[in-house]
Length: 199
Image (cartoon, rainbow, N blue to C red; front, side):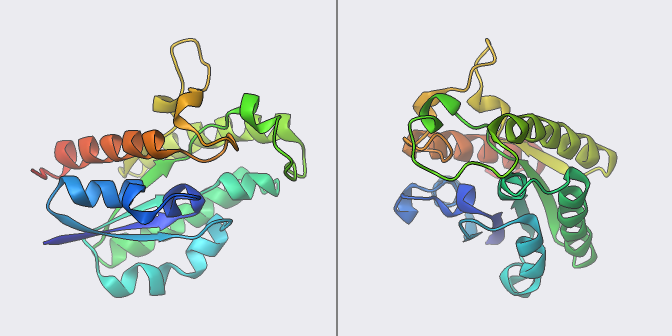
């Protein structure tokens, strides 16, 4: 049985949800594959890079999904730094004969966020949202240019009017709820079946 490692932050870990409802576990339930969830809430792309060997390489999976960047933007880190960290991981994966997949982070649902008592991004919400959109485009472009599969978790959470689909988020407006994780799992399974011929 093949093994996939999902390497990320809270969007992968599944904030406030039991493990059975997270998208990595839902993927494992749907296809014949072992999925290891290596999401850590609050982690940055630099943190993921630092723990890439113990959390990914030592398991020698066939595939790794790398989903990061949202927390970097919270601290107003440069998009090129995020890209450098993520694509350093894809290079390490390829070197170890692990197929990398780059995930595009989810949008933020500001309507809910405004009602929360949480620390704002250090450069403010508007800049954070603008940079998130830029990051999504940059990741997709770099993945295409590097011939790396891209898993789009961003656009399925936005409707045809460019509004974030609130029904898929927890009350914090940042993390997907059970329905959101089901949508993420659905997109992951679609990609695996189209590119890697999973049944």
